[in-house]
Amino acid sequence: MDDDVDMPDAPCGPKSNNNDTVCHEDGAPGEEDVGYISDDSSFYGDDDLRAKLERRAAEYDPSTYWRTAHLSLPAIAAAYRRTQITSASHSKPLYNRHEGDPSGRQLSESIPEFLARLPPSTTLTSATGPWIWIANPYCDARPLQQDLAGLMEDGTQLLDECSVAMAEKEVALKGRPQSLLARQLTAVRKMSTDRILAAAQKRGVTSGKWMLFPMPQDVDAVWRAVADATASGQLGSGAKVATKSEIEEEEDSQGRPGSGRARVVCVYTNDFADVPDVQRVVLKLDQLGLVRQKGSWGKERGIYYKCDAFTHLGIESRNAWGIQASRYSSREILLLPASQK
Image 1 (cartoon, rainbow, N blue to C red):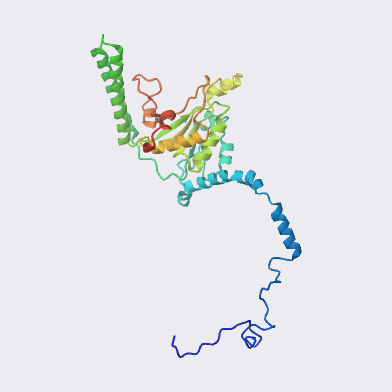
Image 2: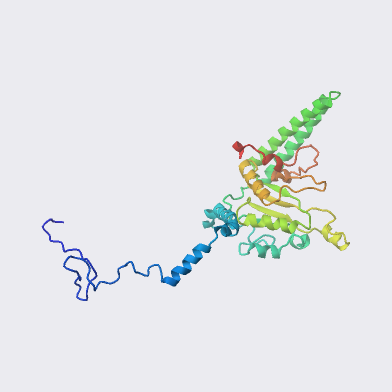
């Protein structure tokens, strides 16, 4: 701006009706000025209001807050963390591999609606099938293209080779100490396990599950906790629970409800080799109070993780090869060093 341009004097008070500023000769606002806060202003309220506020301030006891409202802060923080777990993925399209399947939860259903429609304690296998399903709708990973036929071919051959190798060891070590034979057979089983898991990865059969075994009277509560956590993206890729079998129906009709027969709940992950993810899921299950259950003898049972490849190949807890059916136990995986978490 040029220096020779005359700038108007800054107004020193409010405008009059003819837009002229009303000032004293010394430049101070005149009596006509309004809107300025003086020492006598009611900015802080009148006498009654000030007295009321001062009384409330004097009577305020902060310890009441810390005894009441403050107790809810951990719950608020926990709820915030839960929202952060899936906040990024919530903006993505939801995915439900069980959409359209009446035995699975539909995206249009709330969890209470889903549980009311298919309560596992009373949903019959004869009406719905052996399983009730729920998917994690925020799971980024999709099921791999599985070659089950290839896995069955490879796995059957590897199990046959395991049987032959074990028989050869027994012949070769006949008459030798049993401890030596046991070590040799353990080595054969381990090698066979590693080869089967490698074949499973090659064939895209990488999923596995943590397995829970609630009693019939507890299955609804356990499934509710698992379903809630799965639907909000806090567990794995999905979960399933066994329905009420014909045997249970028959036992009920004979006045022997349940007869001590546990149900099965499976909580899936996409990759048995992804140990941090497998551990993350069992940590959440532990937080839900579903891991450290005690058996009939009062001893903590823990839970176990089984690869789906072993399920397809019929490798159960008691099998002809003596191969360990579970890949992980909650006891060992919860104690992994921090470097492996």
